[in-house]
Image (cartoon, rainbow, N blue to C red; front, side, top):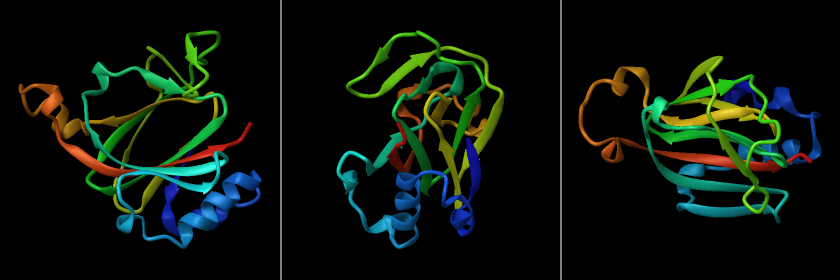
Amino acid sequence: MIMDTLPHLHRYTGIHPNLELALDWLSRQDLHKLPDGRHEILNTEVFVNIMTAQLRPAEAAEFEWHRQYADLQLELSGCEAWEYSREQAGERAFDPVRDIGFFKAEPDVLGTLAGQRFVIFFPGEAHKPACLPEAEAGASDTDPAAGPTVRKAVLKIRLS
């Protein structure tokens, strides 16, 4: 996992050719101008999903993990919390078509995305995105399905 700010993107070149391609593309884009949906950068090797995500209480969500793709996540508007767990997914249920599996675990690292911050979750790393920031998590007894939303970008980067 890498947490940093957009002005430091250049620090992560050389890790993998697809990551370098994604970082170069990201440094030249105004993501705010892209409509929601999938935008291919290099076929299925590197693409970005622009989305409006509904935030949910962290305790109501499971950790997700991927085998082939890293997720580089950043907010376009709003603020979300995320969690990371060192627990390994092992042989848990996995959907190879969608490259995603889910499981319950305890968080080891908590963070937020807003402004210039980004996070990269590598294949096999358990992460829980799109969570309500702590200040908002207990602020309301309303239906969690009616929670706030954020607009975000998730670059999917094939590393294996």
